[in-house]
Length: 398
Ligand code: LMR
Image (cartoon, rainbow, N blue to C red; front, side, top):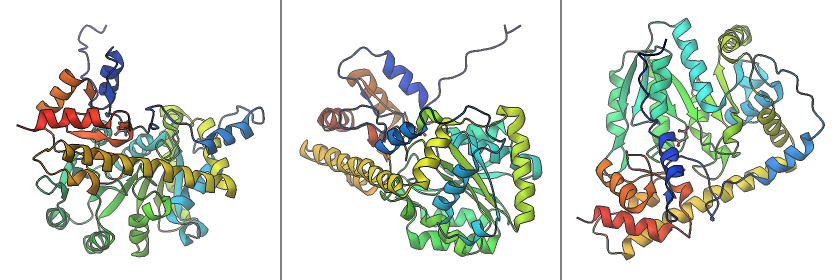
């Protein structure tokens, strides 16, 4: 039956973890996948999550959630993205469903887009998280790209980005990273977001925000929702994919939320029912446990403030590692500028290293990262930063 099936290529991100796990070297370092580690390189379960689990233990049944997921989790997620006192929440104008984390939210939206606007395309930033391309490809939505990153300055190519927004046909769909752009760590400033929002109004473009790192850009989830809030103030209808993988450390629980701001409540009811209809034959209804954890944390003021503190601790440790990596490279006398390590934000540093240099890091130093030169700063620790800096210096100095 399957004689014509060729092995699939390795995933450019998760394949790195597989290679890392298979390496017996005691010196190995994984700065591939964007998953937070403590300063000993160990995965972290947040204390607020442990407490939520204690409260759940033995107290809940294992019934199915509704097709659209946990109502409570969705309510809390919307407050986080749209604002505690959002008029759109009060007016019930947001169609929202629980999703299988951020990937699931993007995929549901892509399928929805294909079903109801079959001739539309999606504009995706260049570069972006590799899986974005797979998601819209598998949903059969044609893709275009827009310029985003300026390799020379290792910063934002704002002029080109605005030009591409301007030149796209009116009413185009754009995928925007709400904060902590993956893989570049480069975000527009607040002023630039205002200009983008204004131009989207003029062009009647639709913004779909992927917000996988809310809290990791500034250490404060509220501040990291700024781009979305600017678009809301300007009267856009938006879409939003939320994920609790990073900011609550619920990676394997697969919990997130897809929301679409609609014209009115009636439209929101219709849209939600269609999103559920897409979910039903794919996975029927989403998983329970992670949704309970999120609802408990976000609806309890004490647990929520504990969570906010813990997000800040994670974000601050990463900022500390950015400084340490840059200082170590400068101390080694690297002739290159490493300013971008501390200028970029969020979980990643887009180092500017070439695929060949990355291959040398892996083959000679057992350092595992994606071939686009992205370093997951969350995997850098006080124990490995000097080793990492030395290896980077070795492969970049000539
Ligand atoms: C990443 O970019 O490393 C994460 O979002 C993990 C993933 O699923 O790719």
